[in-house]
Each structure stands twice: as structure tokens, then as C-alpha cells.
Image (cartoon, rainbow, N blue to C red):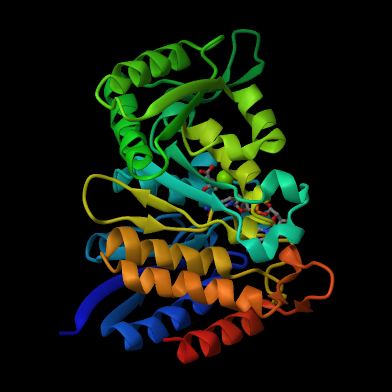
Length: 363
Ligand SMILES: NC(=O)c1ccc[n+]([C@@H]2O[C@H](COP(=O)([O-])OP(=O)(O)OC[C@H]3O[C@@H](n4cnc5c(N)ncnc54)[C@H](O)[C@@H]3O)[C@@H](O)[C@H]2O)c1
Ligand SMILES: CC(C)[C@H](C(=O)O)[C@@H](O)C(=O)O
Ligand SMILES: [Mg+2]
């Protein structure tokens, strides 16, 4: 029986429309192979939404999201909107979407594909076999804490304020996702914090230690975030699952991206307690290469695979896409961010076309 899914597409800004169109074409091919009917609806977010409606997350977009089975997002932001106040910026739309849908868990897997070992700026023996996942808390911490704003002091000086705060329940719910992920994947969990300085981190560490009692088969360790950033480059294979707060997770996952060759390879899933999730690359709208057919669409395509896996319960279709991506790389095609000697340099569109041809011929 044909499975029907309603998918809201949020192309956003910059390279967003270019990469999401590749992912949509890939999903259409996969749909035919696996008897899945995707009904796509496009909606506005970020700068594109500000230009059209004055708001970074219009109510119509949020409604469309609520009415769908899954949401595929590309990226938001760009120079044009950089001087707007923070609550009016494209980024505010993305944060509001995550907050309104209560997507507290952001899974960011960083796995080096054997074909891309030479694309990583790190040595082969350092990156070969890297397979880790960052579980980032997504709707609390310093991104959402109050008070926040730019205030005037008594002396008339401006003072920017953000508040880092975590409650036990917020730590526990992300901790559970991380422990459950570690149970399925390697049994190693490293919690990253700054407990030598920050009270929020002190509480974070206490909560993780308490949870560890319920997961005796998971080996929990802790690292301070500065050391963790260094360890990720020095010896990344020591990591299995990483759990960390919102800001640290943002930074750590961009570092992890480079272990895989490029941020253009890193997908993510933003999940809450319901089955409705947002699937989005870790990278941004790359305004420096937007509109030039230079973007790597694979992080977006792999985000669509995560959508099939986590959101739509179609693991075989997800695996099919992942196999297709490996095959195209095996054939030697590379966008410029993952280019290395003796490979075939292609643009975003050609990479998509070759991937689709490959998927069409695969069993
Ligand atoms: N989830 C999101 O929508 C998201 C994530 C990060 C940044 N942003 C926004 O994107 C804008 C640009 O931010 P930035 O430049 O710091 O980060 P970025 O991730 O957009 O780009 C960083 C660098 O990586 C390159 N890059 C990124 N994705 C690529 C891809 N798929 N293929 C090839 N190269 C790629 C870019 O060309 C750039 O040189 C900002 O407005 C930022 O707020 C959005
Ligand atoms: C664009 C920005 C709000 C976002 C974040 O900081 O969460 C991005 O960097 C990400 O990693 O998804
Ligand atoms: Mg980021």
C-alpha cells in the first residue's frame, strides 16, 4: 500500500533553494522505489519570509508545519538582514520554529565516509573510522534564557545581556535522549560542559551522573568544553555519543563537521516528544557561494535520509539514500568543498543529477 506523507519544505535563504531542490528530487526517486507518496508544500522562513511578510516565521508557515508529517529545512540568514535587531533577524525565525515545536534534541551525526578521507584537513590516521554523534540541547540554555537584550546602564553605557540557564528537567530530557542513543550506538557517552566555571554546567554534570545510574550499560565520561574542542581534533575516535548544551553543541558540531571533510556533509534531526521533527543540514545559508551552483547538496540530502529514518519510519529508504551518496562519491564526483586530487569537480546541480541517475539504477 502506498504510504502518503505531507512534507513542509522550508528552503529559506542563500544556498537553501539550490540544495533543497536536490533533496526533493532525491525523495521523489526514492518514493517511486519504496511506494511512498510525498506531498510537498513550500513555506517561507528567515530572510525570504521577512522580505515577503515582515516576519521571520509567519503564522502561515507555523500552521503548515503543524499540519505536516515532517519538515525539511535548508538554511536561513544572509548579509542583507545582518543589521536587523536580533528578534527580527532570520535566525529568530529558526529559533522560534524550534521553540514552538518544542524540538529540544538535535542529533548531529559526524561519520567520515571512506571516500572522503582525503577531503579532511586532518591526517588519515586521525579521521579514518570517525563515527560520532552530537546530541545538542536545542531550546534552552543561553539561546533562550531571560533576561536578554541590550540595556542602558546608569552611566548611559549600552550593556548586552544573555542568560545561560538550565533546569533539571531540561537537562534530564536531553540526557535521556543521549543515553538512549548511546545504548544503541557503542555504549559510550561523553557529556561536555564547563562545570569548572559555570553553575549551569555544575547542575548539568550532576543530572548526567544521576541518570547514569539508570543506564549501567552506558559508560559516561565528562569533559570541559575547551578540552573537548581540542580532543575532537587530536583524537576524535575516542568519541561515540556526545551530549552538550545549546551553545557548546553549536560550536562542537561545526568542529566535528570538519572531521568528515566538510560542513557540507553534515545532516541533523531536530526532535521533540512527538513524531514531528525538523530535518536540516548543520551548515548555514553560505551567502558567500549562494546562487553560483557551488554548494554541496549532500548534507541536505542526508538530512532527508534522517527524516525518513527518524520521522517517517522508513529506514530502508533512508539507507538507500545513504548508499547512493556513497556510490556517487565512489564514482569520484566532488563539489568544491570536498574536492581532492584526481576527482571530478561538479556543481550542486550536477551532483544532484548524478545522484539521481545513480539511485535510479540501484537495486
Ligand atoms: N541552520 C541554519 O539555517 C543556519 C546554520 C548556520 C548558520 N546560519 C546562518 O547562515 C549565514 C551564514 O553563516 P556562516 O557563514 O557563519 O556559516 P555557513 O555554514 O553558512 O558557511 C560557513 C562556510 O562554509 C561553507 N559552506 C556551508 N555550507 C556549505 C555547503 N553546503 N557546500 C559548500 N560549502 C558550504 C560556506 O561557503 C562558508 O564558507 C548566517 O546568516 C548564519 O546565521 C544558518
Ligand atoms: C543560525 C543559528 C541560529 C543556528 C544555531 O546557532 O543554532 C545554526 O548555527 C545551527 O547550528 O543550526
Ligand atoms: Mg551552527
